[in-house]
Length: 309
Image (cartoon, rainbow, N blue to C red; front, side):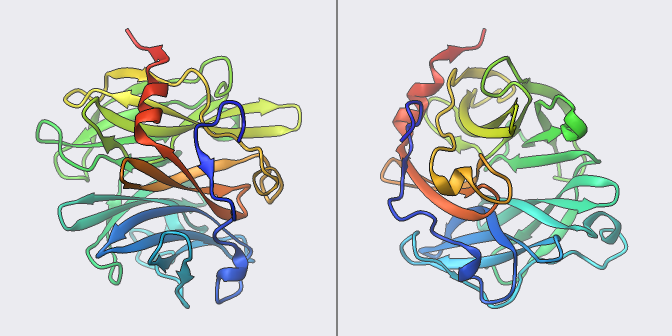
């Protein structure tokens, strides 16, 4: 454990590698996770040897030992509305449950840059696309697990490519298709997330506010360094930040996080809460999937270190 980490890594990380996929691929990483009918469901980004990505499913009874489906689940669409924007792959999913429906946001990648798509499932068998929610360049999009003041709410990260400074934004919608009232929520600052920020996990509702994990990127002499922080948003006015972590709370330190296709990356996309513990699933070095745990109370406490006024 690093000096700033509050998460304890699973001793036998990584929990999923390309060797666990029953068909040829390059890597697995950046997986969304939830529980459905007492089963852990993982929506895994699988990078093919062509370089394109698709999403496939893995299932587990204990949250550690996952079995990957024999075929991909979501592949780039051939429908005219989606094909030009998903042509190069589908990446980095997140899952938000509202009622009995699981909403999956994903990055649609094509010749015009990344956009955010959204679709729904109730059983992790069928999947229906709803729309492409954003223009390019936009990614790292998560949906709040309930309407707030009658509106759906999302966090995302427009810009950020070609070295552009990238911030986390918040937007509102009556129907998940048309979005507005957009504003900057959190911007990079000098320090561990000085280059760009992006939301990592869907918001978790707590008594103190909405708890959101995000990644910060710092440019170094040897490349980018991805680390994780947390912020706490007001329950009724989520565009108001109550506090956020002054230090990162998870950072690359193990060999499997330091060495891979993209070195020095920890990139969470999902979690499961059990007995007050956050079981966090994250991609490591864009090469494998790992697990770490931390008490929710400890993460909330870390958010109080830096107050917003």
